[in-house]
Length: 309
Image 1: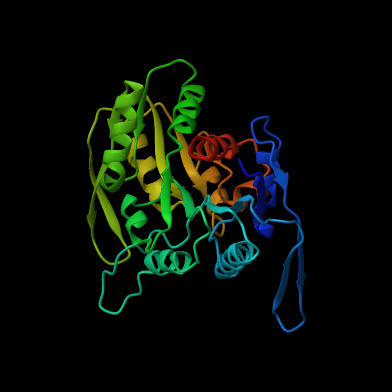
Image 2: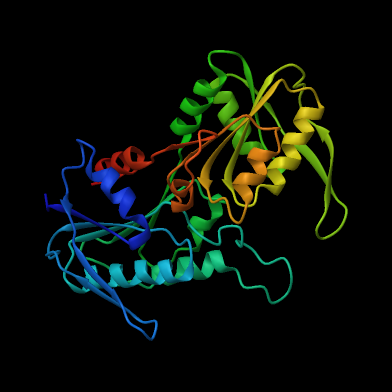
């Protein structure tokens, strides 16, 4: 078997380090040389030897610079003769732009997928691993011979929910009907009740909650959503569950983006007692607060890579 070597973009060095710390990831630590020029251009050099090795490259498409860095590094590994290439994208940016609603809108989830699909193949082919996509159908946007693998952080959600509930019964809830099927599937696996809210759109910027699908009175409600950005939709749902009599409300999310003052807004609302997220987005690691617990997806990634090697 070819030796495995792992690299990461600048924003995801922390996740590479966590992966390498695991006993079942005895992989070579790939070294890069990176410099920024005064005119805004960026220099990248792959220092480690990658020829005939299984290359694992970790990086999220959290912004356009990060996306291009990930693409450039992938291209470099292929040009230097990597035996195989696995690109791990913990958070796939623009995943909410997966379809056009108005004429002329650019479906950026697709354009990003097409970009990575343009990479030349290694001798063993290229894979791309994605975690808890906002929409499953995004995997169909990848073209040519690249093999998308959608990883589900279901074990993380289950363990976090059981820890938050502390052995007491709970209701697993979603922020809206759009995530209801996924939450219902999780709830069935956990043998607990599922709940979601019904919304009515008042205008382009405003929605009103009209009903809740389950009885949550005097119960612990744990809301799951794939991502938290500004927290607006989450707080509207949490208010509805509180007004319906929920005793305690917690939140689990895979991708803790917390844009702007999103985290402070959620914490200061007084409605939610705590949040658990993963380390798929570097923003979550910037928050040092007991209100937020951050769990790593490093083992999920290692298990998937080892299983598919």
